[in-house]
Image 1: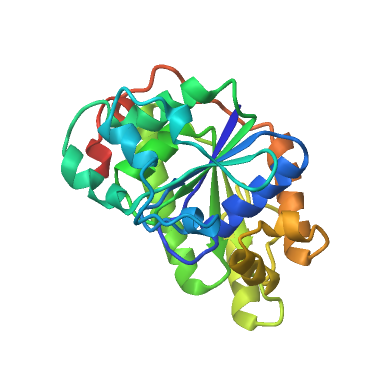
Image 2: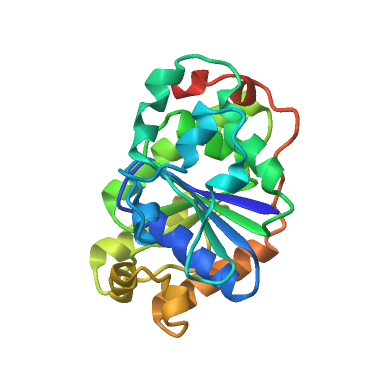
Length: 272
């Protein structure tokens, strides 16, 4: 089972779109694919028609009930091979509830260990803030995907995300491979072109060689609750994410998390 976290500490850069569309690509190829919503806003959960204000079987229970079977919390979607572990808005209280309790950085790792035989791929959609949920996602994943909108302010958000990643890597004493994915690229705008050039200049070693273009069909797919990659495989957005999926599946920097992590696993202090 391969686990990707999709994260950036700036909102509106395409995290949920990235998670959903990649999951659609994997599911269409026959891979049993699990989406995990670790954002209390629940955009991913709402995408599939569930209300994060009302859902009872959610990620929150993994933190509040240590005996719960994670398989019981997973919801089917109407798409073959595609499953969802939804978010609830109650997750927003976790940092305050948990305080400095030890072991809470491993909650998602432990859940995925129990689910390893059931899924081929897992994609974790993360909140745009540093807290116990992001710490869990980074501890659990084997590869980090960082979507970055090709505009100046989003580049600033990338620097914050890379700083957080550096702290996590030092704490966990392992290097976490990551890929920066330029999103919402519009070649007709000077700002988009300049931002992409800056990414290529500053982050060439970790930057995916292509881009996710602006495509209004992403909005239509979201309105319909259907991953664009399952709704129309020929739209340019689908084609781009299919190329990204191929890259991720063949990337040789994949590195499963160690079973013996240090600070990130045994405490949540990074989140405070």
